[in-house]
Length: 334
Image (tube, helix red, strand yellow):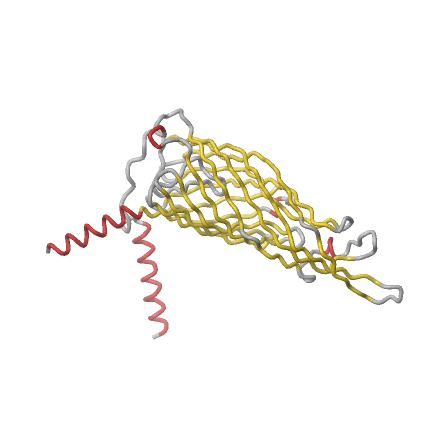
């Protein structure tokens, strides 16, 4: 009986996947504007880099995925974008940043707001690029680096005073302001701009251990000063149509990284370049799959590269409700 129930559940799940992948659950895509070929299933971003456009009114994009590699545990990727009036969109997402002390990715909750500065009536001109501004900001997150998870280069390296790092706690947050110019055509498109990043650390405490004059291990706690770092970097990406269902994408941007300098006994904030190259496959007119390879400039070699896999679902809420109301009306007339 348990085996039969399992088979029924598997068949039911396969039926749902087949139903969704054929595109019958939602209406077909409307015709895109000339010179702005945006499919209804296409998110308003590449892998991470935002595009110089926004979702249509009442469109909702839900995405999820993960990045993983041989030398890291990777991180989950989740976000939801809502189109507002055809000129703006709001987003809630999570993003992963590498913690140099542990070598693992820390997940940050992010919220963002993006506005298209080009009127919708002018977006159909073939050679007039779009221009958007986007503000992304995370909330404060406490990062606790336990002694067992801190990598040996930090725990084994002594400071000038002979003390070794045992553990470190800190509150972290960062904000990013993007100004992007871009355009999309039937054969592909480009996105380019500048990104301003503001990184802040507070409430830091560090634990040290050392040998006293009697040869016994002792430890002490020390507060850390607040740290703030700003930097400006370019950001951009390209997309090229491979066939009717697939396009090739490549992007590059900078990300903040947090490191600990043993000799100065302080956290150092710097930036690293993050590049992703891969494809976006259109399963249906509203569902896409992303697959690519992610590499960061502070990685030690090819073995540190990560594979990124994800899915995107763009739901045209107005069209779905209209179709549902029409179905109810037709049923009531029978």
